Length: 320
Ligand SMILES: O=P(O)(O)OC[C@H]1O[C@](O)(COP(=O)(O)O)[C@@H](O)[C@@H]1O
Ligand SMILES: [Mg+2]
Ligand SMILES: [Mg+2]
Image (tube, rainbow, N blue to C red; front, side, top):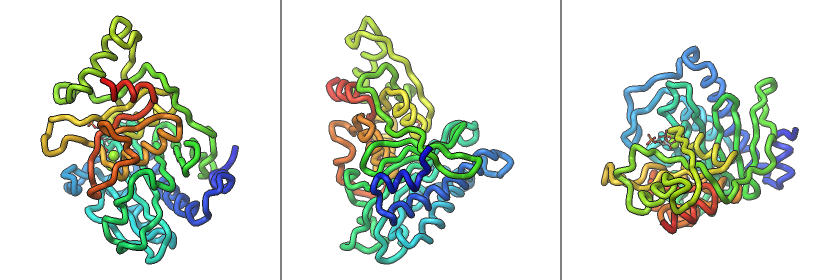
């Protein structure tokens, strides 16, 4: 089985970019270890703090953010970082080639129940026309991402990664601490019979989401003519991983639960990296009627609707 660095070199990934990925993964190994130790490592439970988005921060949100932040800011190749847990962009090394955004811990509500959680990350080229600490560093559409991935802390620790080519899957070998290439190419079947949505929000959805889900629930006697199964992890990283592995569609559409906040997931460090991974595995990813990767960001912690996965299901959603 190929190790990570030879695999990336074989893909023609520049050395400096490989070094940035190595830094992210060094942090992920530490997070993975702490997560596997659970209560024994003192990472469970909440803090008394809230992040800029008004969400209570869990101890593991803070710890994961601190590990990634410290390690990336020490890297000679990182000019700026942005994180779900940081209000503003943080400047790194002046003149460095790359900027990195991350959701240090996705699926925070799963931490204390020993459920699936993960780290989502994305890497862009740094902009020379704006300062390193400017939010404009990250005002780039998802189509400009140089690399995108997530690390899933499940029964095994896995990383899905694309550097522009296929979405590949690596597994952390705990016997020697290295990521090994275990799936050359993840591929999402264009047809699906499994969907993933928080059904508790049903009464707050718009008409198109209502119609699409009603058609799936109607099963073999409905317009789609077949039975669908449903899964909801409560962690995008686990739900999208399932879609990449065995197909299906994941939806977090707009809803009217909180009119000030129609969408939940964040464009920069949740929707964009997942959209790149899904597209490079043959799937589609849209927000309302727009391809996610084409959205021009307007703010650092901007939220968007996300519908992604099996190409024909995403088309059916758009037509409902
Ligand atoms: O609480 P809900 O509505 O099920 O939302 C779950 C969604 O929220 C998230 O947990 C948000 O991410 P964070 O845990 O990083 O804030 C997604 O991973 C997940 O898809
Ligand atoms: Mg998240
Ligand atoms: Mg998070």
